[in-house]
Length: 458
Image (cartoon, rainbow, N blue to C red; front, side, top):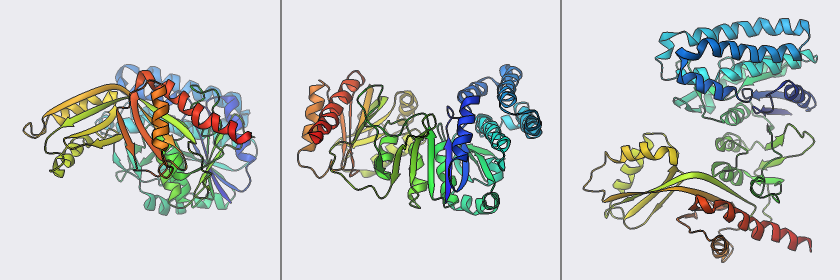
């Protein structure tokens, strides 16, 4: 059995965390391939460095080097620390050269290269810890593995077929020899050999790409939470862990607000029916949430509720919307030029409404200004709204369920400003003002999760 195990930034963020992770890896049966994020705080540190490379690089290099060397020295004995330095120094020299390379700075992929440096060193730390515990391990970069990426800077996607071909040559031999590869998450390499990141939080997705490429039997995402919950426990203390989910349920919740899993993680494993577990590296005995194609519906009307906050509705009014589909096409094409996420779309006879992040409104409006003013009558912006995602087994097949849910929303004194229903068989999404989002979640959870559990126990 081959298990791909991904560990997030907090899971590899300290000496104690790395030692805990090493034990988790070694206590897992069968063959293992590990994917790591950067140590917690490092990616944000590197993003800040990109904003002022000239003013910060000397100090940043010293801070970065000290951070990783201090962990290695405290975690490894003298001999293993010496072996660690043999690999650490070339990687550090390459990082230093990158920050002083004036030509490299001109590349649109320069930020991808700088911000992906953290993974190159966290993987090295974990690999050498495994070696110090008496096991064969190799720290491999995405370049070493052949993780092929394509797309725009800071927003790449993996070429799954090419990556599978490359990893069969570059990674599988390590596994077959009983060695544990520890691979950099977060980025791949484009056709020109330049690092291309998969977006913030993209190490989950990178791990799913590795699992797909190696035809793994299981993907485990180790993080700092027990798994998917029925709601955010910071908002709803009575939230409970969900033991099993389908791929679709997990993808919906991840995309629309549950900060457990990067939303793109699901697709690479779904393609090959690879089960996925979300587990807590700080509670390794906790079984977590299993995500697969085999979850049987239990007729739970509402299994989980999540929210994506700080959004805005942009309403484009045109009398031609219903009769000129090309106008809708041009509107969406203009907005997509920014590569900004669109969380929901709704249309009426004369209006198309789109839901985007507050931070993307300004650039979106600039793009929409390029459209023909004879076709666009008015553009309105409703800022500071939140999208609530309700996931359940029977949301589209149970008579009156929408009315029950919106009745609960009424109890929260919230005004529904946009609705998306029918696009997914397991979810109902709607928009409320930011000021009402927490009350709405609490009431929905109380009515459809807590009260239903109490009834089931009676």
